[in-house]
Length: 329
Image (cartoon, rainbow, N blue to C red; front, top):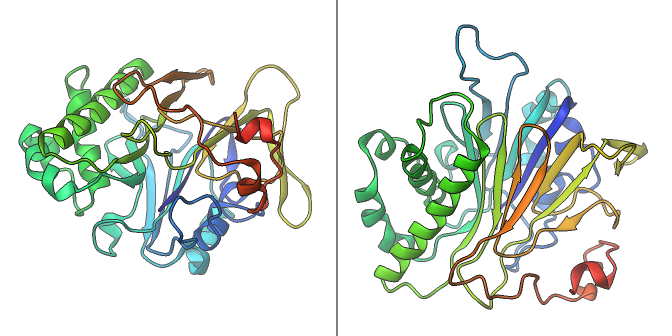
């Protein structure tokens, strides 16, 4: 199961502080994932990074992101380290892949891009081969042509764009975060409807992330009342900094305003005060003003326990120093 990371900040952050240097960075998670639901710990089927330049493209309201993808394991790609030591951005998507569908190719590596929109997914759409054709039938031609690979994740992105198109042109430049949120919910509900019509009973894991370069919308979701969604955490503060050599980072809070927000499949640090677990069946929004907003996804699966049943021993066995109140609510 994949691992992902999102940064949104007021000031640009060097990618190395997220991707290579922290003790449990996204590269570390590629070879040592500790909170995966499955038994694996390696995410070696490629990686991708998307980031937005600070200066928009001249004569355009659209600010398309830069995307770097490769099929090599993230920890062995020298170009990734070189880029991370040079590039700064205030909005970053990063993803390390453990494939559940689709071949090993750059076309199947996240994040996926359409205009100024970035998308990535951690999870799997259950029995997607049964949903793929009816999903495709829903799409306008321009979104049917978006997927270049063959993964459930990229076709879910095409469905999201189709849902967004009902509210606003995805190429309209800045998209109100409420529209991104609404399209995200419609994407999840449409996938659930297609699964029900195809008599698919296995739950789908839908930890989705999307951004237009100004706002971020993410979900921690599983189409089940009882099973656990893939892990997802967030951290907010004034600065994410290395306080001791060896990759020891922490989130500092010098004032009440949030200047940096991180969303990650696994915490980048082992500091218990830095990270909050996002409940199952939740949608989280970071708006352009750095406000963090969360809602329960109110559907037929909303009655599930909002937090997983794992106790503190499970988390502590993987190196995290969370107390029981944080992980066993």
